[in-house]
Image (cartoon, rainbow, N blue to C red; front, side, top):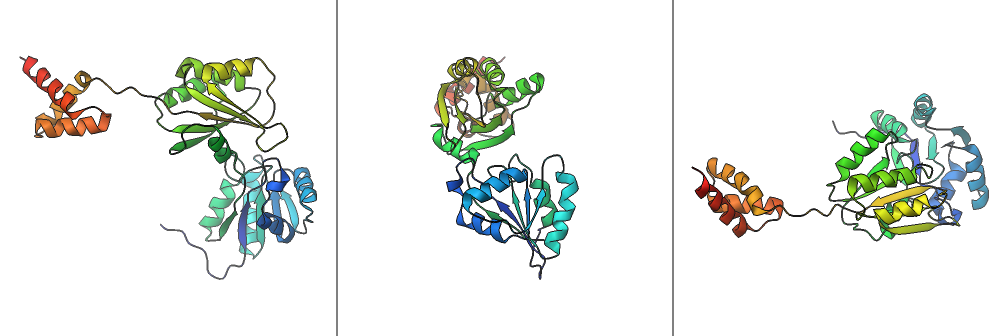
Length: 288
């Protein structure tokens, strides 16, 4: 079913992208929304107050807390506010609401009710870290926060061992050294990565290099601040033609011509069609 916006509703849920650290990154639209919204839902009212003061804005609307621990309970009330015609501005301590921060439930509930949801774009730790990492940006995925439990973390890295895209995720500074140690064990010390710390803030730092070097860097110091990790894509060696000969012959057994089967398998695995054709011939001729 395609969701739409209920006609006649003057209310709206606004997702406000908040500066990661430097208030100067705030957009003019965010400033206006802070000053004019009927309701401002925020993770921390004190941080909201500091942001408004830095921006020279007076928050005139009703301020409510909207955190991970009360998101479920507060969402129906925000939906009722939007339904009643209010402009509800949802902000977090930094970055974009709903991206590893509270907000997804409110967005989903408003859309389910046919109410409008709009976004005020702003800074993103995910895209900023990706851009400055020096790693491939043409294909990437975001994994949220890394698993905390050792078993789940090792299984997670096992899934990323053959990931062909650049991976971006968040981690606590207290767990960073342990995480990188596990990454070296599961992925190898040569896999490239970048540690982005305190993006846009006074002590911003980006450390790039092989995982083994990043792990040593994290062990040798007390890492503090907000951490975003960027993991380079896996470099996968192409399989040998002999390892794929049986797959080619399997397609031949289904009625494909040998050359067509070799071409199909070769394109799927990045292997020469001729090399596969020759390997499949040798395999077929060697069978009794």
